[in-house]
Length: 367
Image (cartoon, one colour):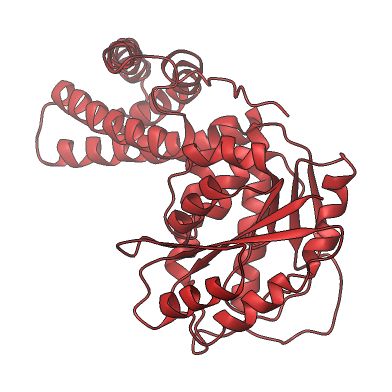
């Protein structure tokens, strides 16, 4: 008989906790055993006391507790590493999702066709409670951005309901870092990089409002966008990587040009202004590269990465000087000369960073 382990992160859910635990164990059948790993994230209400009493009633309810509040992602990491079932899913401690949908989600896993199954809130029309347009729009936008980086074609990246073979999630779990809702794009990036077989299943969803206890907010949306890029961009299709570098390089070039103009306006000699502006733009470029696009230290040691980066700076700095004053010698205005030199350096910078400084270490996970 297969066992389904459902990780239940819990923070101040005393109003719904007993009901959702009962409802979750209610999906057990003669062919399916259910285990709940409930992780109380240092609740300030009676959630933990309720959970302990429920554990006396349900032998397969494993209650764990964080000493300090860390966030949903941290609670999930704890739960994943303590799950014992054949398949591991996520069940929030509120009543937004129906645990019975896991029976349908299990089908492609039991058939040996999938390694991971996402429960999508958007696959089928259904009677539903109408809430904020902007919340749904943000979910769909984040899913689109995630798909562009991962190459997956899923409809609901931000869904709570994600179901894994236990060996898959326990291989991924030690890599997870996000403590809050950045977990969703982070785990999706690792699933895509692992080349796992992903299915989707339509699920039911009854959302609640902020007033009713919903904890996600607009700040989590911005963090999710950052996580999509930080964890997934380095493995995105090449056109997507270059598109992102156009933003990084374009922003750095703008810093270069604007600072150069400011220095000239302050009567700084042109040669000094070129050097200062270039160094400032290089620092901005490096920070954006390791924050957004490339996998930091994927190949080099810290010293090796630094050496490679300085070498490219020297080479591209010489090119920047050469093109700037070369165009100026041909009669182009000094600021426009600087602009053309910066644009020409864009392609060279991308190639150096992608293939020399931050080469992508291919993911070794296999199914």
